[in-house]
Length: 395
Ligand code: NDP
Ligand code: MG
Image (cartoon, rainbow, N blue to C red; front, side, top):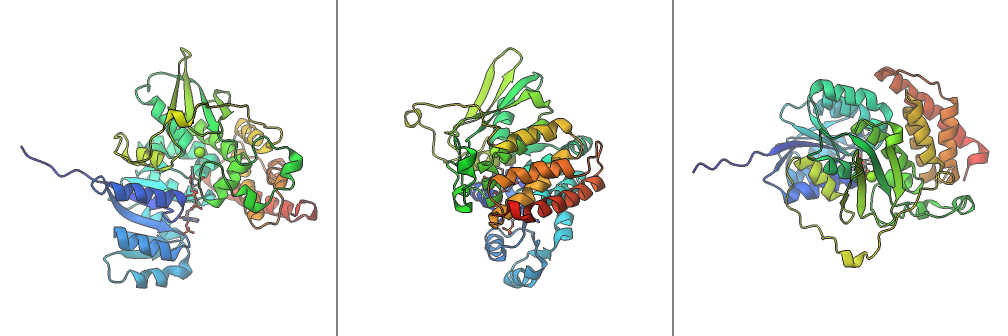
């Protein structure tokens, strides 16, 4: 019998040096027959990008930070790898003909332009960069529909929903429940939160992640962003999306169908599983990840989130209800506030205060275009930055 060699999926990774990017490379390293890396893209971590390029020998690497270009080029001069630098090169690389799927694993608003370019070029997206859907979910999903592009969720909750929906495409969703660990400050009050320092907020109980999403998890903004992300991924109304705190992070999310039946996806918390599912879809690939043992978790517990103390979750629902450019405003203000918190310029409670103030003061547009989003992002950042600089909000 004729044996055909397995067809490899060609992948580009936007943000290969980050938490998701490096775990994605673990997945690809474990499946050399399933994937081929076309492009690796990083922003500033030249030494790690060089090491990754030397190991995987992709056709192209791009370093966003242009000052690092010669360092990367010289270190890879003996290999058949094209090296580029700068944001425009990143956008151009999204259009490479051979690439089938782009893993968007960069952080924040910076992911929007390259993701739109990838979709416009007909590339499927394995989406980790949730901020892209928060900022411009309507634009991104409309373009994906027009181009026949699939957006596969990498976020563990959305991957869980996606896995529960396999074989259910004709069955309408009544409701989804996104689970939340509650973060390191679950159960704490505002008096406690007013004393929280950067290092405490950077210690997540169940997941090791990049700095921005770790702060977002502590402030519950991450769950707010995920509510908006779910609205666009699964075409739901805000009232169909609920959040439930589940401190053990074993049930990764649930879908409820119109007959009342609920499906959940569960397992030990490990981002490599949703990354692998998104890249390998529709196949489930082998994995030697540790298996869940019921006896280690005799009880799984659930609580209502405290939206009063953790204002961000409530603000995200309000932004979603309001629509237009409001989620873009929320996201920009949050990115500024998280950066200011990480630089120890503002306190923990000022995270949501910055977002709320910016949502009240930034120009609202009900039907934004791409250019409107660019302007909204800039205006919201200016307002948020000014708010953070006021002496009353400083750490
Ligand atoms: P990290 O901060 O660990 O990594 C970010 C990556 O993006 C790095 O490779 C960084 O490059 C690169 N990068 C930063 N700025 C730019 C830019 N302007 N252009 C291109 N690349 C850039 O983040 P995470 O991996 O934690 O998160 C990535 C995304 O995935 C976020 O949107 C996050 O919300 C989402 N996510 C993450 C999860 C996790 O477990 N970490 C879970 C679910 C979702 P360099 O390091 O070279 O500067
Ligand atoms: Mg998540």
